[in-house]
Length: 288
Length: 304
Image (cartoon, rainbow over all chains, first blue to last red; front, side, top):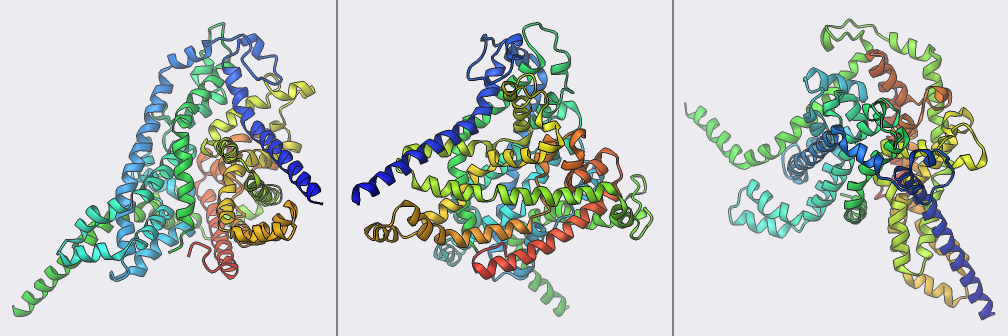
């Protein structure tokens, strides 16, 4: 009886481990496929099938990609909208969240309502585009920074965190005669590092991956952000593929190399991302 | 005179009391107003014949013209049906996957092994569809792709028969690993004494999963299911936009891609806004109803 049970458990464990190895392998394979193609020789890459390693190792495709100015320009633009969006969000969202968290402030319900309502309902793609255009912000990186910085959902998360902070510290500061601005910058913000770190990463990831707004608001080549440039190369509209004259590369290997180059920064910060994203889910679960 | 002084004093007093809060709240208020509420006002374009030169205010009113056009057009009804079909397909085929994965992850005994698996299966979540679509195009390409071993000469991404299934599969690829997190959080809240008691009573793995783990996370499952139903009109804009092409429009065009194409590619802003307003209003109703429902199952759930 006891032996049978243990045997059943063992079989279950083995199957479970095998299942996850298979699942992870299938998840990872497309990346390996891409990496192998990017390092393969033109003619041998085109034979297709499963790739587990490069066929005829060459870095010609990478040399080609890194010669192009556009990829550096796109990297630069992506970094600008990411860093700009995160910094602006930290300032604007946290300070707004602070007034939202004060129940005794006049208009408490109103300040909260306008944020919650804008989570539930939005003007949508086209009216947003028309507003941004009439502000003269099209083809300006500022448009993506401003749009990315103001995210109502993040404001609510920060507000919930503020409301869960111990009241005593603030109260004693008020008795000492500190002004609200000072309490906010010197007491509340330093205590809120965890939520601010999580929000920064959420905003950073969504800005880095923000394809749609990049496509809508930054149509000029010199303003391309990384996902838009990648899209252009993948569907073969970009010079990178068109100008392709060197014999050791093909459009496909160059495309693959570009994708790998674009993945590198994400992989570099990935362990950090994973940790703080997980924390954020827990923060989101805290209801206020 | 005395009175005026009183008012000034009162003002100074109020400013001392609230001035800092105004300074703190103003930037956020202005940005919310410009980037969230002005576009809502811009929805009037749905009832006007919007013209770029005449702007929001001077463009003539046309009543329900665009709605008549929308509901008469085949393109929009196809997009609407596709949205529902793709959403439901994902609901049926995708929704259970993170639940199953989370339960099985929880059954892994070796912590470092589980961590490694998690690191791998979370990865696609952090990568834009722009990049993932590039990877998928070459994965399924007739020249470079893996399907060459099966002798398939056309990419399944170009075939109407397989396209929607690929949407489901690639959604599982990108999102199911990450989707486990919320269930893992729920599972970690289960009292370990329950399992110990069950082991003493001789319950095997399946019984423990069936009678302890599943009932303990059923509240979370129901809430997430209801919230998902509230967003049924979001079939995955970025994903569809990146993966679709003219040869699969009939099965792949969803409301969001329809709005994007009509509005930004052909410049018919009013028609696209009308479609957007239609979607936003239905979405709002669905979200409110599903929130209320979610609250019935779990008073702490929902966004309000």
